[in-house]
Each structure stands twice: as structure tokens, then as C-alpha cells.
Image (cartoon, rainbow, N blue to C red; front, side, top):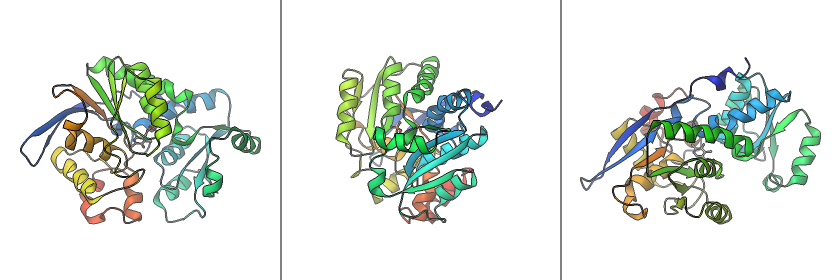
Length: 312
Ligand SMILES: *Cc1c(COP(=O)(O)O)cnc(C)c1O
């Protein structure tokens, strides 16, 4: 079966995290290890791509086309998943030049993805129906999936994730990072408990729309953005490394690091009862670390131990 990769039993473990603060206090929560689904198609990208890939195969598309930045976890995961399922893939990349040394793009190309650069101006139209229809006319054999993979088909995979969590245990909150918001809305739709969303992108329109879709269910914590998408600080990087040292769990500073920072360092600011049982979702995305090293945004030697423990 072409979809065998997505048929494997994906029930990921839930582990207890005890993070020790310098004050001696211990911050405890639960962590669902969706990063362990697959080294390359990790976390919420596996969840979101599953039904898109199945749909593409069922409808006899030749492949999947999508959009992403030059270091995108979604592009990396899509290239691999499509390859494993005998589908072609096209990545429209926000860049003026396709840098052949860029580790994410190099990997996607190795997986057979056809990379097409879009200028920043062109890329701004990635959600415009007219622009998409033009591309669809040019590539009629391809199923078009939006940036981040967040579409209606993705919601089916997130429903499976929610059901998996419900079968595993009861929680007061499930916490996740918010990028395009697809994962958050899937969890809000299908979980009985509250959802704690930690945005990593400065996008008030998205946050307002999510909040108005799920007024009672979704609690958004905006204080761990560190200035916006891909913005880092020494404090955040140090925290990610310390989290790894204490727990053995690798996180990256773009998504999961900001989520864990909120849970560990801003627990008192979350507006969540002290005794609330929180499950955080490890959404994977660890390939992003290679891009951060490549751009010298994190210190390669400090991350060597964490990164060598992964099959990146
Ligand atoms: C893409 C991504 C997210 C964001 O998920 P959305 O559904 O786009 O909100 C979170 N974490 C990681 C590691 C990701 O790669």
C-alpha cells in the first residue's frame, strides 16, 4: 500500500515532565511525544499530512504542492511523506534564490521535491484564490495544500490526535504552539477539555479569529512570542538547552521551545489554576535546528549533544 507510512500505529507516549527552576520550585506537566512519530515527518505535520496524502492518492493526483519558508518544517515533512507514498511534490518557497546549501531545501530536493522560488511579493498572495487558481491551472495534477498544511483534510488527522489523547488520560488543558492555527483549532473542535494556545507568530488577525471561533474553549497566552516568528533570544536558547539537559527531551526555539518556556517559566502568568493538569503537545519540527545552526542563530557546539541524539 502506498499509504503504509500513514497506517502505522501512531499512538505516541505521554510522559511526565518535572522541570526544576533555579528557585528550587518544580514545574510539572505532561508531554505527548508526537515528535517520536517519525524523525522526518514529525509531530503535527504527520497528523496534518495523513489525510491530505490519502486524499491525493484516492483521487489519483500525481502529487502535492504547497508553500513554505526556506527552513519550513512543513516543506521538509511534505517532501519526505510524498516520497514515501510514491507521490510527487512541489514546494513554492519564499525566497529569491534557492540556496543549495540550505539544509531544509537540500533535504527536500533529495526527497524529490520540485522547488520553485517565489519572491516575497509573490509569496504574499499564497492564500489568494486567484493566485492559487493560476498555479493550479499550471499544475493540474497536483493537490494544493496551504502553507503549514492546515486545511480541512488536516482536521481529520487532528481529530485522530484528539481521540488518541482522550483514550490515554484526562487533562484540564492541552497546550500547543500556534503557527498557522490549524492544530489549535483541531484540538479545540475535538477535545472535551480546554486548550492553551501559545502563539509563536505575531498575527493578531489569526488570534482574534481563533478566539472568536472557540470563545470558551481556547485560552491564548501571548507572552512567549519573543518578538515574533523565528525571533530568538539567548534566554530562550539557554532555556531550551537546559530543558534538554534536565528532561532528555529535545525542543527547538521556534515552536516547542516557546511553548515549554511558557509552561515552565511563565506558569504563574498563564491564568491557569496551580493544580490544573496540563498536557503539552510536542509537535516535533526538530529539523528546524539544522537551519538555525546553518544561519548561526544557535550555537552549534552547545547543541551538538542534543542534535546528535536525533536522526535528523
Ligand atoms: C508547524 C508547526 C507548529 C504550528 O502548527 P499550526 O497547526 O500551524 O499552528 C507547531 N510546532 C511545530 C514544531 C511545527 O512545525
